[in-house]
Image 1 (cartoon, rainbow, N blue to C red):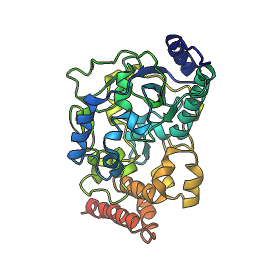
Image 2: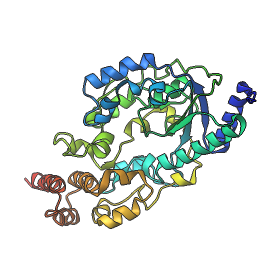
Image 3: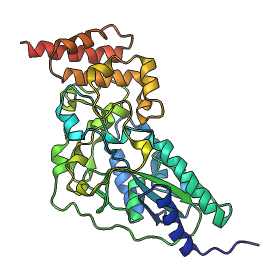
Amino acid sequence: MQKKIDYHELAGNIRTWATELGFQQAGITSTDLSEDESYLLNWLDKGWHGEMAYMERHGTVRSRPPELVPGTCRIISLRMDYDPPDSTHPKIALKNPEIGFVSRYALGRDYHKVMRSKLQKLATRIESVTGQFGYRAFVDSAPVLEKALARNAGLGWIGKHSNLINPQAGSWFFLGELYTDLPLPMDNKFDKEHCGSCDACITVCPTQAIIGPYQVDARRCISYLTIELRGSIPLELRPLMGNRIYGCDDCQLVCPWNRFAQNTLEQDFRARHGLDAPMLIDLFRWTESEFLERTAGSAIRRIGYECWLRNIAVALGNAPKTPDVLSALQSRMDYPSELVREHVQWALDQFKKNNR
């Protein structure tokens, strides 16, 4: 005999259980992303995804959830704060060119692992009420239009920088989803944006990657350049990157809505290994084994040691031209990787320009 389920009660319970697991908010939406599909396809047609070939390869699967997970009829969207307490303020780190800036989301344990574990616990809790049901959990790990889904689930609006903004929590949070086959009641879409005439995020972008409201050319974005790009960083963009060695938070730092942001309560998201304000020279001296050890369980591990050195070499080229910086760069002149050598040479060339 099939169990009778009160889906309205279940939806309320899901929000309660999500909060108990450490999420700050949960919402429920349908699979309809038809309005966002044309935006996605237009973005891909313009080539703004750069070398992220998987974006194009997945095509409309991203905007049609049932094609990704057959049987899906509702999506539970959740958010979790990540801004770590007791860490150097990002503006302080950015102002010191001898420090390497790491995006705040990557200072602690890999969010994919933390949130996926919590999503599984949520699914197990739901299953205790419904019995076995169809679901899949996603945390930035599959072709999912997570921000559009979160907006549709009432978690916030998509700002001019393309990040989701919540009026009570700003934008310093991760998103995760549970695709389900449960006919849960849906939340109201957050259908009004509150950016108004503000264009602070557009103006502040170091590389002018936000080419207009809600339009981001990833090929110019420092997060793309330091994390997704595996080849040579374009010469004209290197001086604009400053000391940003993994990601970029500038558009969030200037967003007035982030005055409402809260520090994370999740211990796993606290800064590790002093990465909230590390000296560039010290990072450049890490051996590959030290890199692997100190980025174990971190999102940073994904870029690999070669790109890590590439990024730091660019930052050292933008750093004060001191004997210690020069010595650090010269120590990597004969590094086996051609990619690293190229960026080290560029950094050394900045010393020559400085002495003309």
